[in-house]
Image (cartoon, rainbow, N blue to C red; front, top):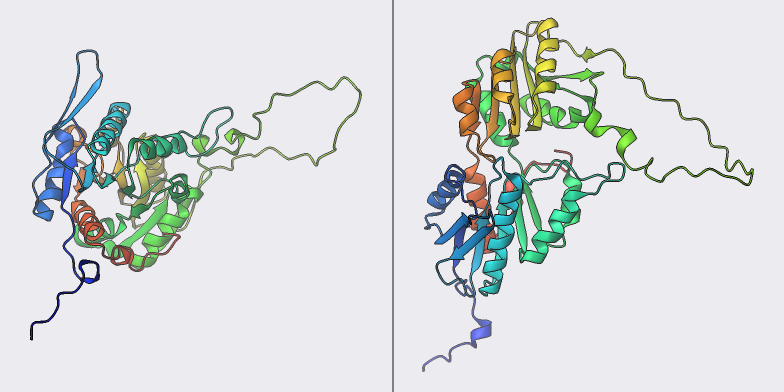
Amino acid sequence: MRKARPHPKCRMNVPKSGYRVFSANSSAACTELAKKITERLGVEMGKSVVFQESNRETRVDVKESVRGQTIFIIQTIPRDVNTAIMELLIMAYALKTSCAKNIIGVIPYFPYSKQCKMRKRGSIVCKLLASMLAKSGLTHIITMDLHQKEIQGFFGFPVDNLRASPYLIQYIQEEIPDYRNAIIVAKSPAAAKRAQSYAERLRLGLAVIHGEAQCSESDMADGRHSPPSVRNTTGHTGLELPLMMAKEKPPITVVGDVGGRIAIIVDDIIDDVGDFVAAAEILKERGAYKIYIMATHGLLSADAPRLIEESAIDEVVVTNTVPHEVQKLQCPKIKTVDVSMILAEAIRRIHNGESMAYLFRNITVDD
């Protein structure tokens, strides 16, 4: 007797709709990461054209049908940050109006992530960018090592904040001779938590540089002085609050013994290298015989390559979340770690509806 077919809604393992991977960047150098990801996934790059009009307006043309599909937009952030943001926004909106089912942004380095706090009468630009991305049509974001993990709360849709530390730790173990004689260094107390994570995983000691000026993270610029002072003409003195003593930076000291050791400074972003160069000089004075810098995002702006080349730093290791080929040509001390594998695996798992927990195994909230 022939068995009756189950109702379509009751069938299991129904094939999912297709997915496409697009690159939203107009720069040839910035499409390298997108090509590596598509090669690992075994798919072709989506057909689209991104270019600048003669009046510098961004134009995006999608050359194939995306109706009902899940779309992944890979966008690396070159030096022209604002152009890259507009490319991403316009492409997401173009795909939204072309009836794409889901639009997921793969943004390894999230721009404006340092502007995630109120500074005097400024604005929280990172929150503004999150709202713009949601309005353009994005439904999900894959990023890596956000400057502050609280940035995930700016979005009204899922954000997968991947970690580059496994790849950087692997580089330390495989490429740094005698790494067992190394010590992990935080260039400021604010970076101590990240450094502690590296030290615990590598079973190494920890040192912290204390007393370095941190103007960008100053408590004096967080909005508490924003309201203008008003002269009180009624004679009322108001509340008598305890007088807060002004902060005074102590002399720069290194908490921890770095003498005769390999010093490895870890951070999430290396952009203006002045702080890193100063930290390297201090560590050299304290007896460190080799100095490495490990960072996820190598922005390396302005004359950073020249400063690194002339400094006591032996090697700067960054990932390929941000294009930096020009900087590598200017400074052979800069090395690159490829993180396309974890980005490709995240795309594959999201498309197949698999758990992302595997990518965060043994990673705590503090990491």
